[in-house]
Image (cartoon, rainbow, N blue to C red; front, side, top):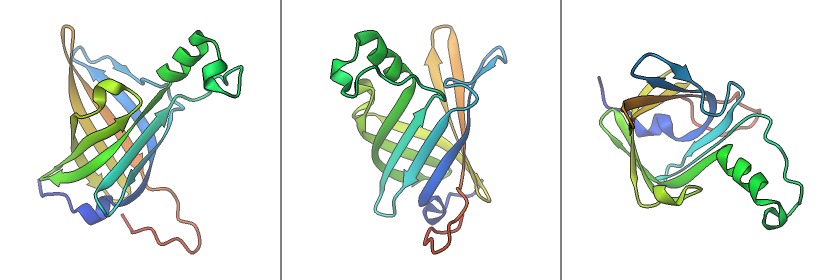
Length: 154
């Protein structure tokens, strides 16, 4: 497999699907089939990823700190986000997490196997869990271009 071209990753990607595959073949979608996400790779080496479950319930208060703890916990459970530096390591993408919704991710290196086919990017990572491992497979697609857009082609 040839090394990835960083220039082909730069730009905006929309989440098409996030699947988790377990050793027994079971497949789940962590945020459901309607999950939405945005992945940004900047030419200066910074990246940002945000994913949320579909149909998240609004908080009862405009200020999250005034909402009940159970509502805040549900909001946390339906959202995933981090950002930091990125680089290509052969056919993998490394994310060096500097900010994250989950404080345990800050300071970690997130290594993703990457496959780029046309306007589709698949990022995969294995995770150790009790009783074995599971594979996260996230499929990202380039959004349709708007007139006057300067986004690079993928």
